[in-house]
Length: 350
Image (cartoon, rainbow, N blue to C red; front, side, top):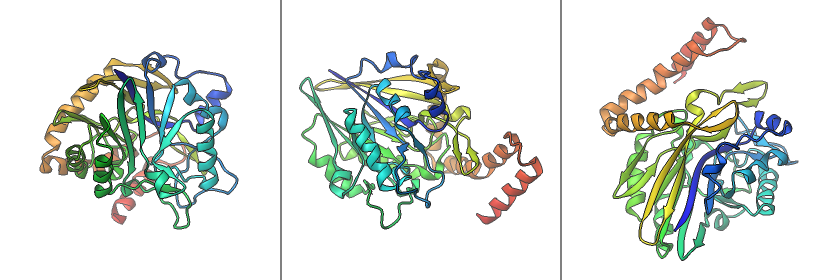
Protein backbone atom coordinates (compact mmCIF):
# COMPACT_ATOMS: atom_id res chain seq x y z
CA UNK A 1 0.00 0.00 0.00
CA UNK A 2 1.11 3.56 -0.76
CA UNK A 3 -0.37 6.73 0.72
CA UNK A 4 -0.68 9.88 -1.38
CA UNK A 5 -2.08 13.07 0.13
CA UNK A 6 -3.61 15.79 -2.03
CA UNK A 7 -3.83 19.37 -0.76
CA UNK A 8 -5.37 22.54 -2.18
CA UNK A 9 -3.97 25.86 -3.34
CA UNK A 10 -0.57 26.83 -1.93
CA UNK A 11 -0.23 30.62 -1.92
CA UNK A 12 2.73 31.54 0.26
CA UNK A 13 2.24 35.21 -0.54
CA UNK A 14 2.31 38.54 1.32
CA UNK A 15 1.50 37.88 5.00
CA UNK A 16 3.20 34.48 4.81
CA UNK A 17 6.38 36.32 3.87
CA UNK A 18 6.07 38.37 7.07
CA UNK A 19 5.26 35.22 9.03
CA UNK A 20 8.42 33.54 7.78
CA UNK A 21 10.48 36.52 8.91
CA UNK A 22 9.16 35.96 12.42
CA UNK A 23 10.28 32.30 12.16
CA UNK A 24 6.75 31.03 12.84
CA UNK A 25 5.77 27.57 11.60
CA UNK A 26 2.16 27.77 10.32
CA UNK A 27 2.02 24.04 9.59
CA UNK A 28 3.09 22.58 12.93
CA UNK A 29 -0.43 21.41 13.80
CA UNK A 30 -1.24 19.94 10.39
CA UNK A 31 2.07 18.13 9.81
CA UNK A 32 1.07 14.93 11.65
CA UNK A 33 -1.55 14.37 8.92
CA UNK A 34 1.04 14.65 6.14
CA UNK A 35 4.24 13.24 7.60
CA UNK A 36 3.36 9.59 6.98
CA UNK A 37 2.47 10.12 3.30
CA UNK A 38 4.62 8.51 0.63
CA UNK A 39 3.83 11.53 -1.57
CA UNK A 40 2.21 14.92 -0.96
CA UNK A 41 0.72 16.65 -4.02
CA UNK A 42 -0.18 20.35 -3.88
CA UNK A 43 -1.33 23.06 -6.28
CA UNK A 44 1.37 25.75 -6.36
CA UNK A 45 -0.28 29.13 -6.97
CA UNK A 46 2.66 31.38 -6.16
CA UNK A 47 5.89 31.86 -8.09
CA UNK A 48 9.21 33.50 -7.38
CA UNK A 49 9.97 36.88 -8.90
CA UNK A 50 12.17 37.20 -11.95
CA UNK A 51 14.17 40.09 -13.40
CA UNK A 52 12.13 40.43 -16.60
CA UNK A 53 9.08 42.19 -15.15
CA UNK A 54 5.53 40.96 -14.73
CA UNK A 55 2.62 39.76 -16.86
CA UNK A 56 0.49 42.90 -16.89
CA UNK A 57 -2.36 41.04 -18.59
CA UNK A 58 -2.95 39.24 -15.27
CA UNK A 59 -4.58 40.82 -12.24
CA UNK A 60 -3.86 40.26 -9.45
CA UNK A 61 -0.38 38.79 -9.59
CA UNK A 62 1.04 36.63 -6.83
CA UNK A 63 4.60 36.01 -5.73
CA UNK A 64 6.69 34.81 -2.83
CA UNK A 65 10.38 34.72 -1.99
CA UNK A 66 12.83 31.85 -1.66
CA UNK A 67 12.87 31.87 2.14
CA UNK A 68 9.07 31.65 2.35
CA UNK A 69 8.80 29.07 -0.43
CA UNK A 70 10.93 26.79 1.74
CA UNK A 71 7.76 26.20 3.76
CA UNK A 72 6.87 23.55 1.15
CA UNK A 73 9.57 21.38 2.68
CA UNK A 74 7.75 21.54 6.01
CA UNK A 75 4.62 20.05 4.44
CA UNK A 76 6.61 17.30 2.77
CA UNK A 77 5.61 18.44 -0.74
CA UNK A 78 6.82 15.99 -3.36
CA UNK A 79 4.85 17.05 -6.44
CA UNK A 80 3.69 20.55 -7.39
CA UNK A 81 0.91 20.93 -9.96
CA UNK A 82 1.54 24.09 -11.97
CA UNK A 83 -1.24 24.20 -14.58
CA UNK A 84 -2.59 27.34 -12.90
CA UNK A 85 -3.62 30.82 -13.94
CA UNK A 86 -0.74 32.39 -11.96
CA UNK A 87 2.16 30.42 -13.37
CA UNK A 88 3.23 33.30 -15.68
CA UNK A 89 2.68 36.19 -13.26
CA UNK A 90 6.40 36.98 -13.30
CA UNK A 91 7.11 35.87 -16.84
CA UNK A 92 9.52 33.18 -17.97
CA UNK A 93 12.23 34.09 -15.47
CA UNK A 94 9.81 33.86 -12.56
CA UNK A 95 8.69 30.44 -13.75
CA UNK A 96 12.28 29.28 -14.24
CA UNK A 97 13.35 30.50 -10.81
CA UNK A 98 10.44 28.58 -9.30
CA UNK A 99 11.11 25.27 -11.05
CA UNK A 100 14.82 25.64 -10.29
CA UNK A 101 13.93 25.94 -6.62
CA UNK A 102 11.69 22.87 -6.85
CA UNK A 103 14.47 20.88 -8.50
CA UNK A 104 17.01 21.83 -5.84
CA UNK A 105 14.56 20.65 -3.20
CA UNK A 106 13.77 17.33 -4.93
CA UNK A 107 10.20 18.41 -5.70
CA UNK A 108 8.76 17.39 -9.08
CA UNK A 109 6.26 19.46 -11.05
CA UNK A 110 3.74 18.94 -13.85
CA UNK A 111 1.20 20.97 -15.82
CA UNK A 112 3.51 23.63 -17.28
CA UNK A 113 6.82 23.82 -19.09
CA UNK A 114 8.89 25.57 -21.72
CA UNK A 115 7.53 23.30 -24.47
CA UNK A 116 4.34 21.32 -25.07
CA UNK A 117 5.89 17.95 -24.31
CA UNK A 118 7.17 18.97 -20.88
CA UNK A 119 3.90 20.74 -20.09
CA UNK A 120 1.86 17.66 -20.97
CA UNK A 121 4.02 15.01 -19.35
CA UNK A 122 2.50 13.19 -16.37
CA UNK A 123 4.11 12.22 -13.10
CA UNK A 124 4.38 8.49 -12.56
CA UNK A 125 4.71 7.51 -8.92
CA UNK A 126 6.00 3.98 -8.38
CA UNK A 127 6.47 2.39 -4.99
CA UNK A 128 5.86 -1.02 -3.40
CA UNK A 129 4.87 -2.51 -6.77
CA UNK A 130 2.10 0.09 -7.22
CA UNK A 131 2.10 2.74 -9.95
CA UNK A 132 0.00 5.92 -9.96
CA UNK A 133 -0.14 8.24 -12.99
CA UNK A 134 -0.94 11.87 -12.14
CA UNK A 135 -2.09 14.26 -14.89
CA UNK A 136 -2.63 18.01 -14.57
CA UNK A 137 -4.75 20.29 -16.80
CA UNK A 138 -6.15 23.83 -16.83
CA UNK A 139 -9.36 25.08 -18.45
CA UNK A 140 -9.56 28.49 -20.19
CA UNK A 141 -12.32 29.82 -17.91
CA UNK A 142 -9.70 30.31 -15.17
CA UNK A 143 -8.24 33.18 -17.25
CA UNK A 144 -4.50 32.43 -17.27
CA UNK A 145 -4.04 35.48 -19.55
CA UNK A 146 -0.76 34.42 -21.12
CA UNK A 147 0.43 36.74 -23.92
CA UNK A 148 0.95 35.23 -27.35
CA UNK A 149 4.71 35.54 -27.03
CA UNK A 150 4.83 33.69 -23.70
CA UNK A 151 7.51 31.02 -23.61
CA UNK A 152 5.85 29.13 -20.77
CA UNK A 153 3.31 26.57 -21.97
CA UNK A 154 0.32 25.42 -19.94
CA UNK A 155 -1.25 22.00 -20.30
CA UNK A 156 -4.61 23.27 -21.53
CA UNK A 157 -7.47 20.83 -21.16
CA UNK A 158 -8.86 19.22 -24.30
CA UNK A 159 -11.10 16.22 -23.89
CA UNK A 160 -9.44 14.26 -26.71
CA UNK A 161 -5.98 14.88 -25.21
CA UNK A 162 -7.18 13.74 -21.81
CA UNK A 163 -8.61 10.56 -23.35
CA UNK A 164 -5.34 9.96 -25.20
CA UNK A 165 -3.30 10.45 -22.03
CA UNK A 166 -5.50 8.13 -19.98
CA UNK A 167 -5.26 5.44 -22.67
CA UNK A 168 -1.49 5.89 -22.97
CA UNK A 169 -0.99 5.26 -19.26
CA UNK A 170 -3.64 2.61 -18.73
CA UNK A 171 -0.90 0.15 -17.72
CA UNK A 172 -0.50 2.11 -14.48
CA UNK A 173 -2.50 0.74 -11.58
CA UNK A 174 -4.26 4.10 -11.05
CA UNK A 175 -4.77 7.36 -12.91
CA UNK A 176 -5.39 10.66 -11.10
CA UNK A 177 -6.53 13.78 -12.98
CA UNK A 178 -5.92 17.14 -11.32
CA UNK A 179 -8.01 19.93 -12.80
CA UNK A 180 -7.65 23.71 -12.52
CA UNK A 181 -11.21 24.62 -13.57
CA UNK A 182 -14.52 26.29 -12.73
CA UNK A 183 -13.40 29.86 -13.33
CA UNK A 184 -16.86 31.39 -13.64
CA UNK A 185 -17.66 30.36 -10.07
CA UNK A 186 -14.45 31.42 -8.36
CA UNK A 187 -15.42 31.91 -4.73
CA UNK A 188 -18.48 29.70 -5.18
CA UNK A 189 -19.51 26.86 -2.91
CA UNK A 190 -20.58 24.64 -5.81
CA UNK A 191 -19.07 23.79 -9.22
CA UNK A 192 -20.15 25.09 -12.61
CA UNK A 193 -22.74 22.90 -14.30
CA UNK A 194 -20.42 21.84 -17.13
CA UNK A 195 -18.01 20.31 -14.62
CA UNK A 196 -20.51 17.64 -13.61
CA UNK A 197 -20.75 16.14 -17.09
CA UNK A 198 -17.05 16.65 -17.83
CA UNK A 199 -16.00 14.88 -14.64
CA UNK A 200 -18.13 11.86 -15.51
CA UNK A 201 -16.58 11.71 -18.97
CA UNK A 202 -13.08 11.79 -17.48
CA UNK A 203 -14.00 8.96 -15.11
CA UNK A 204 -15.53 7.07 -18.03
CA UNK A 205 -12.27 7.42 -19.95
CA UNK A 206 -10.36 5.66 -17.19
CA UNK A 207 -9.56 8.14 -14.40
CA UNK A 208 -9.79 6.72 -10.88
CA UNK A 209 -9.76 10.03 -9.03
CA UNK A 210 -10.33 13.70 -9.90
CA UNK A 211 -8.93 16.49 -7.74
CA UNK A 212 -10.03 20.05 -8.52
CA UNK A 213 -8.66 23.49 -7.69
CA UNK A 214 -9.06 27.19 -8.52
CA UNK A 215 -12.21 28.43 -6.75
CA UNK A 216 -10.36 28.94 -3.42
CA UNK A 217 -13.37 27.33 -1.73
CA UNK A 218 -14.09 23.81 -0.52
CA UNK A 219 -16.72 22.39 -2.86
CA UNK A 220 -18.66 19.10 -2.61
CA UNK A 221 -17.37 15.74 -3.70
CA UNK A 222 -19.22 12.78 -5.15
CA UNK A 223 -18.66 9.16 -6.17
CA UNK A 224 -19.29 7.99 -9.72
CA UNK A 225 -18.80 4.38 -10.74
CA UNK A 226 -16.93 3.82 -7.50
CA UNK A 227 -14.50 6.69 -8.24
CA UNK A 228 -14.16 9.98 -6.36
CA UNK A 229 -14.61 13.47 -7.79
CA UNK A 230 -13.46 16.39 -5.63
CA UNK A 231 -14.55 19.52 -7.46
CA UNK A 232 -12.36 21.88 -5.44
CA UNK A 233 -10.25 21.41 -2.32
CA UNK A 234 -10.10 25.13 -1.62
CA UNK A 235 -7.04 26.84 -0.19
CA UNK A 236 -4.43 24.88 1.67
CA UNK A 237 -2.67 28.10 2.68
CA UNK A 238 -3.34 31.53 1.24
CA UNK A 239 -2.89 35.10 2.42
CA UNK A 240 -4.78 38.24 1.46
CA UNK A 241 -3.28 39.46 -1.82
CA UNK A 242 -1.77 42.94 -1.57
CA UNK A 243 -1.68 44.28 -5.09
CA UNK A 244 -1.29 47.77 -6.57
CA UNK A 245 -2.21 49.46 -3.32
CA UNK A 246 -5.33 47.33 -2.82
CA UNK A 247 -6.11 44.17 -0.91
CA UNK A 248 -7.83 41.16 -2.47
CA UNK A 249 -9.32 39.52 0.59
CA UNK A 250 -8.68 35.79 0.95
CA UNK A 251 -9.63 35.74 4.60
CA UNK A 252 -13.37 35.04 4.52
CA UNK A 253 -14.32 31.79 6.24
CA UNK A 254 -15.12 30.06 2.94
CA UNK A 255 -11.57 30.73 1.78
CA UNK A 256 -9.97 29.44 4.97
CA UNK A 257 -11.52 25.98 5.16
CA UNK A 258 -10.23 22.96 3.30
CA UNK A 259 -9.49 19.25 3.49
CA UNK A 260 -6.54 16.98 2.89
CA UNK A 261 -7.54 14.07 0.67
CA UNK A 262 -5.46 11.14 1.85
CA UNK A 263 -5.62 8.10 -0.45
CA UNK A 264 -4.37 4.62 0.36
CA UNK A 265 -3.63 2.86 -2.93
CA UNK A 266 -3.46 -0.91 -2.83
CA UNK A 267 -2.92 -3.22 -5.79
CA UNK A 268 -6.60 -3.81 -6.50
CA UNK A 269 -8.43 -1.13 -4.51
CA UNK A 270 -8.02 2.27 -2.93
CA UNK A 271 -9.64 4.08 -0.01
CA UNK A 272 -10.07 7.78 0.69
CA UNK A 273 -9.85 9.68 3.95
CA UNK A 274 -10.63 13.39 4.34
CA UNK A 275 -8.89 15.49 6.99
CA UNK A 276 -10.72 18.82 7.58
CA UNK A 277 -8.89 21.92 8.77
CA UNK A 278 -9.16 25.68 9.03
CA UNK A 279 -6.68 28.48 8.51
CA UNK A 280 -6.84 30.94 11.39
CA UNK A 281 -4.42 33.85 11.28
CA UNK A 282 -2.36 31.86 8.75
CA UNK A 283 -2.01 28.89 11.12
CA UNK A 284 -3.57 25.58 9.98
CA UNK A 285 -5.43 23.44 12.53
CA UNK A 286 -7.65 20.37 12.37
CA UNK A 287 -11.36 21.30 12.63
CA UNK A 288 -14.02 18.58 12.51
CA UNK A 289 -16.70 21.27 11.96
CA UNK A 290 -15.38 21.68 8.42
CA UNK A 291 -16.29 18.06 7.69
CA UNK A 292 -19.87 18.69 8.85
CA UNK A 293 -20.09 21.72 6.55
CA UNK A 294 -18.79 19.65 3.66
CA UNK A 295 -21.38 16.94 4.27
CA UNK A 296 -24.15 19.55 4.39
CA UNK A 297 -22.85 21.08 1.17
CA UNK A 298 -22.74 17.63 -0.39
CA UNK A 299 -26.42 17.13 0.51
CA UNK A 300 -27.42 20.45 -1.09
CA UNK A 301 -25.37 19.51 -4.14
CA UNK A 302 -27.75 16.62 -4.86
CA UNK A 303 -30.43 19.18 -5.76
CA UNK A 304 -28.09 21.38 -7.80
CA UNK A 305 -27.49 18.52 -10.21
CA UNK A 306 -30.92 19.40 -11.60
CA UNK A 307 -30.69 22.35 -13.98
CA UNK A 308 -33.62 24.41 -12.55
CA UNK A 309 -32.11 24.38 -9.05
CA UNK A 310 -28.66 25.13 -10.41
CA UNK A 311 -30.03 28.16 -12.28
CA UNK A 312 -31.33 29.50 -8.97
CA UNK A 313 -27.85 29.06 -7.49
CA UNK A 314 -26.29 30.78 -10.50
CA UNK A 315 -28.64 33.77 -10.15
CA UNK A 316 -27.87 34.01 -6.45
CA UNK A 317 -24.12 33.77 -7.03
CA UNK A 318 -23.97 36.49 -9.69
CA UNK A 319 -26.63 38.84 -8.32
CA UNK A 320 -27.43 38.34 -4.64
CA UNK A 321 -24.00 37.43 -3.27
CA UNK A 322 -22.14 40.47 -4.74
CA UNK A 323 -24.72 42.76 -3.14
CA UNK A 324 -24.36 41.04 0.24
CA UNK A 325 -20.58 41.32 -0.01
CA UNK A 326 -20.84 45.07 -0.59
CA UNK A 327 -23.31 45.49 2.27
CA UNK A 328 -21.29 43.70 4.90
CA UNK A 329 -17.67 44.12 3.89
CA UNK A 330 -15.37 46.29 5.97
CA UNK A 331 -13.99 49.02 3.73
CA UNK A 332 -12.61 52.18 5.29
CA UNK A 333 -11.92 53.83 1.92
CA UNK A 334 -15.40 53.56 0.39
CA UNK A 335 -18.73 54.41 1.97
CA UNK A 336 -21.69 52.03 1.87
CA UNK A 337 -23.44 54.30 -0.67
CA UNK A 338 -20.38 54.27 -2.92
CA UNK A 339 -20.14 50.49 -2.74
CA UNK A 340 -23.83 50.08 -3.64
CA UNK A 341 -23.43 52.48 -6.58
CA UNK A 342 -20.43 50.48 -7.79
CA UNK A 343 -22.46 47.28 -7.50
CA UNK A 344 -25.34 48.77 -9.54
CA UNK A 345 -23.04 50.11 -12.25
CA UNK A 346 -21.24 46.77 -12.40
CA UNK A 347 -24.55 44.93 -12.79
CA UNK A 348 -25.54 47.21 -15.66
CA UNK A 349 -22.26 46.50 -17.48
CA UNK A 350 -23.08 42.79 -17.35
